[in-house]
Image (cartoon, rainbow, N blue to C red; front, top):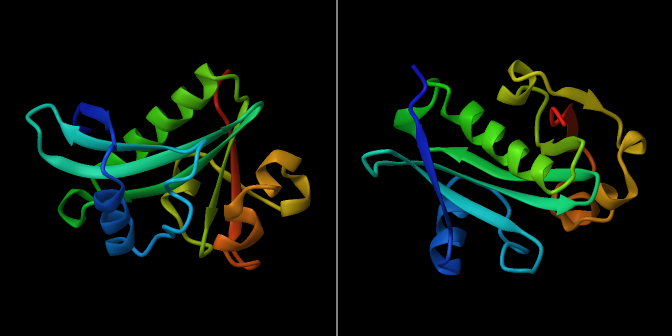
Length: 147
């Protein structure tokens, strides 16, 4: 059973960088404007993961979804992803995009499809993730937000 999650804004830049670094995720641009990072916990306050997004008009770029090891395989990553996509949809995004460093990702199990970068909107390709934080070999994934 997927636990109900409570999302709160990450308001400690140093703590955010520490969490993302520990997960092996890029941190160079996390404090720049236009990015939202959320801390996820169970209803009783147990920290389970982190995730972020960049609203880009008709698209949303999902960022830095990480689940603490002891909660992996329980649907937490999917719940975080669904919440981030819904937040993007509310802000007008019809499509969600995410970069990964490999072919294998939990996003595929959630219905994301691999897409070539040439198929991504200009706003996604103009992000720091696309320009340099993720290598040119990073895989781009897309899913409709359900708008």
